[in-house]
Image 1 (cartoon, rainbow, N blue to C red):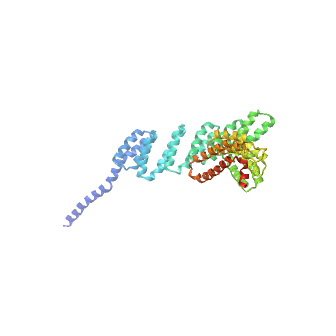
Image 2 (cartoon, rainbow, N blue to C red):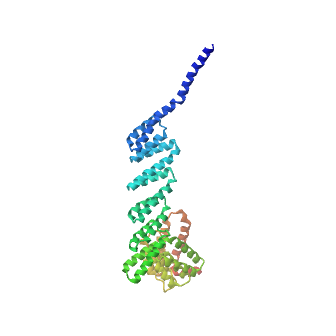
Image 3 (spheres, rainbow, N blue to C red):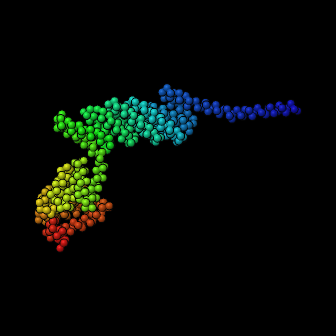
Amino acid sequence: MKNYSKYSQLNFSVPLVLVFLILFFIPVNLYSFFNSDVNKAKDFIKVNMFDQAITLLNKRILDKPIDEEAHYLLGVCYLNKEQFDIAEKRFISAATLDKDIKNQIADKYKEIGKKYLNKGIHSHAYSLFQKSIEYNKGNRTQIALMLRNIAKELIDTENLNNSKLIVKMAVNINMAEKNVLNKFIIEKANKLTIENAIEYYNYAYDLCYNCQNNNLAGNRLLDYANKIEAKKGLTNAEVKHLRIIASKLLNKTIETNLQVYFQNAWNLRRKKKYDEAIKSLLRIVSINPLYSEAYNVIAYCYEDKKEFINAEKYFKQACKVDNKNCSSLAYFYATCTDKRCKNPKAAIELATKDIELQTNFQWFDYEIIAAAYSELKNFTQAITNQELAIKCLLIDKDESTLQWRDSKVKKYQKYIGYYEQNISRSNFKQEKNK
């Protein structure tokens, strides 16, 4: 019995071993068997045999549609074959099956993008870099830095034209590169002769008009222009050209500061601190002689001080530097109480021209014309133009200015009442006092 029992136990253990082998070893071999398509595909990809790899990977996906690696590798193949839309579809499938694969996709887009960049196919490179960033936001800084270094090398070797495409790409990917690249260009230009530097300075300005480094370039050009002019080494036209470039570089960098100065000056005028306001505004126009609105506010200050001759001088200057900013001068001529400066005919001429130049403030121009005609005792024309001013205000349907427009219309209707009584604009205050 003992022998039989031993035999029976041995006989029973054999099937258990077979079951163990089936459960644990065969699936591993089956996985290796089916996954051999992926491994072979990888080998094909290494030697750029992408069509052969695609065949194997499609077979693998047919057998196992949820194999994220097969989808990813298929995307890599199509990416190398420049079939970008199909590649993206495969990458989307891979990322849907496994979110952790996104970084691999991002790195692959960046890698292939570099290849196109080296080939000089910038449009492909840029598109691939953008895709890389979509899958991994952290790649934005890395790619921009890489492009910055390439651009700097081109700038340093005076290959400015080729650098422009790289610079544009870097800035489009990361706007923060503007300042750095502007600095590189200015630094390189400062090592060149003025004649060769001008192209660099213009490019630096076009890239970043308000970068602080432009000050260095602008000051260098101004100093050079002054020295050459003193020595008469250049023609007047050439010196003027240098000054224009210098002014462009300098003025834009301080434009924001000028706006702050202007607002401060405006507030000083409201507080009736006219001399302080004028001083601040004169500083603005010394920096930027084309700041027309600053001249107007200087004129307003002198008008408030009853210094009408000075007021006329600065209203004229505002109109001179900007022919679309002549309405203040026209209003001054139409309504000034000083006979030395009153000029209703000039007011009508200026306001009429202003109507032809712009459409935004025609109501004001018609008010000016109406006031001027009243001073000429032509009250029929005064009424007609005041009605046109009201009509212009009523055309505007902006809800945000409704209250202001209603107030203005009521005011203009009162003006018409005065004109109907043959009362000129300069006598409105006198009539009100009665």
